[in-house]
Length: 142
Image 1 (cartoon, rainbow, N blue to C red):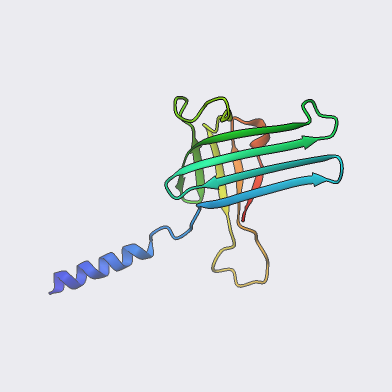
Image 2: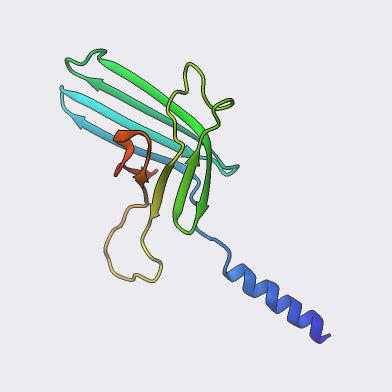
């Protein structure tokens, strides 16, 4: 009986330490200047560990004026850092050309212990990436 109670308490305590932060979901960032340019980033992290990324830019006087770039692959998390990877054989083709290997992003959210009225939007901040314009990019959870 003692063994059964001890086992149940151990299982209960382990669930307290389980990761409760749901990283998966849609993230978005739109940068616009009326009549001049529009840049939009969309990132989807699926529960199965796959991700899809789409970058759209429409720049007045740009050559070409509209550009769509796509990336896909797998993601994993450790603590609050998301690591992205892309398989050269499976994740690249004529459409999906962005290489997310060596890309890392930090998951930022309001600490549950913070009882202030401060508003902190849930976001991913890219810390490292082989894509030069991804470094320090924030995408916000929708």
